[in-house]
Image (cartoon, rainbow, N blue to C red; front, side):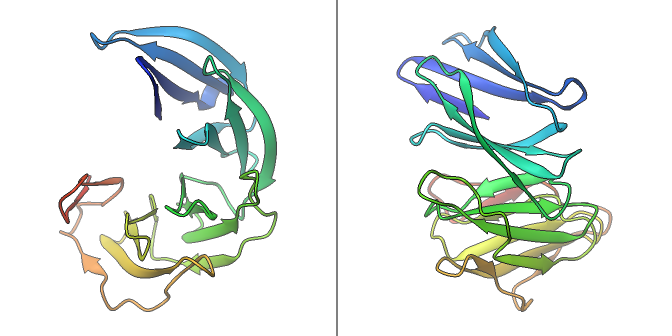
Amino acid sequence: SAQEEGLTRRVYITLGGENKLVWLALDEEGKLKKEGAIETGGGPGPMALLPKQRLLYVGTRSDKGVRLYKLGSSGTPEFIASSPLIGNPVYVTVDPARKYLIAAHYGEGKVSTYALNANGVPSKEPTQVLDTLKNPHSVQIDTSGTRAYVPNTGSDVIFDRGWDMEKGSVATENGNDAKSQAGSGPRHFAFHPFLPEVYFV
């Protein structure tokens, strides 16, 4: 995850095997310089960054949770809170309205959503647990805040579902799901910044 602050860009990296969160400065020539590291515990993995709110969510795999950090003026993460998840998170994100944290659980075959309070801390209990197909690898809400996409790596199917921004839930019907090429294993994806296109790995 990367944060841009004025002319200073920072890159955040989780080191799961070392239980660390590392941050580096990225200069205009594309060179990285390590600025610091903190112990996180829990086997850190996926991250979700909210640059304007200066919040960083770190999914922790060994303890099946998520940790929230506030980014200080120098980019230093300051621990705020931790919350449990229903399973090992392979991916975490926050919806465009910043009301819900959403997690994909690869081994469990599920997606879960959690309401965020005024400080950005996720609820202890999920607002929804959605059964997916085999091995959901990520989840994102489109910029309109109305569609949820979940690529199922093990079944070569990409969920294209409605997103209810008030209830924090993904539609259970599969009317728009897309079948990818057999064996392609759709995983992560990115929306084009202004065209109606999405790119899947």
